[in-house]
Length: 412
Length: 228
Image 1 (spheres, each protein chain N blue to C red):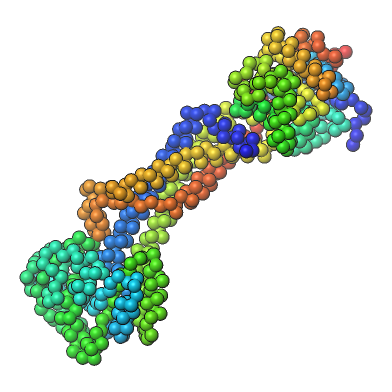
Image 2: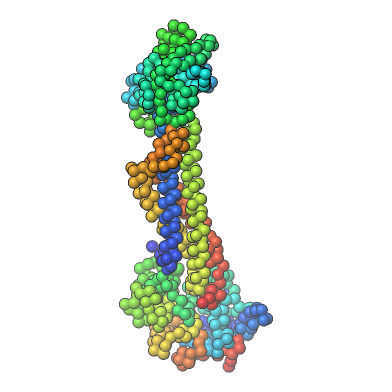
């Protein structure tokens, strides 16, 4: 190994306590950063998974006009060809057809704007968790099912009669009387407050305004489906699109297209976490800089002697940079390993955040968070450490460059 | 440009003046001297007479105010900083009063350090370092760090280091100042042997009578001027 690098490494350990504190704090900082990244990634992954399970789904087939303006008339043309393609694809786990309407729900004197999802209860419960979280009654093929939050808001309970008012595909207003036959809970409060399930078979004739042709085609607004493996979702979607001969104006969107905010949150999180790490390391860079300045001050005489016997200023600069970099890097692997191990353990046991469970429930999250290992961030962390180590070496190295051999050797 | 004559070292009307808060300090005032190749010489005089200043100027560590210094045909007072460092690395060896070894390197690494800077391969520099350490009587101490060696032993490592680059001239600034009598005698014997064996020219600055007694050539400085 280059003698200059050997010297740099040994120089670090001339003050074992001082260097140990810097190495320890770097390890601690990297550990804290990695663990926080894992925790934040765990929260985000849980939030994304909850959103996909609750209301987004893995992917959706719909008419492009419906996507653009939620036009009740924008029915999916020939849904049967799509359901046949879904049935034929082994990657597709389940699918569910929906009519989607904006409506006003009136219960006694209270009323609220709601989104009606007219579904086949059995199929719907295979794609989304909300129907599986029915805590009172059942997701019925005759009555409607409300979220717990909406039921509380309207003061409605099981067996109560409510009126749904909506516009059909011909633009005429319909009012339909239903009994509340189920109440679901345990998903995001945002969803529980607006989303109401109604039986597709009972509501379709009303929505289609007696259009027998549409009835015969089995017209719906959306088909949501769930796949076995989310990692190969794009390939599965492409295969389904390829299997349909006449897609017309129908489009297939993955969850990233259905809910761009979730996808965006993923990207923002990645950048925020690295920024967070950079802030930690930036603070630590000052500690490293201070340590190196002290080291240069203590070794003024020695540096002068090295210059006297032939070490060029460029090599003095390199020596200081190497020392700083090695000092910065010494703690990093310890921090990474500790962080990785901590995440590995807590990803099994979970971390229960008592006292914030209600806040987490607003986002459909449980109060126990399971951190997620983030090895893809390790390389950027190493690069950050290198960059900040390099930056913090510049000032001490510049100080060393300014030394005069004679004056330095006079220093006691 | 070639040297005006053949001595290894020629100092020609060198003046060194420092500026201080109390006014200019004339440390060296028009010193001229010639030193022949293979000499074992001492620059002597009381403290503050300008010995170390002159030695630093000869070693290219300090710029002269006026005058010229030639070493082995090169006018070092005309070299740029970078050229001076390069010249020093290859042509001048230093022995300092306080040994000034690198504490994190062991004995052979200290000796080999200059050779690494010269770009000599690891095997050659290791062989040469061990050979030099043997020559200064430190066989078996090659892997010891400076803190594990006595003052005399450290100074012997410093002498080995000064010779590692096969310099034309070794400048030793008060090399025995921190040594006891026995260590001083041993060190002087070693340097005299190396002077004979390798033909290296030695120039000491000293006021140690033991060193003065062993020197073949003596230059006496008084108040920055050479005394005749």
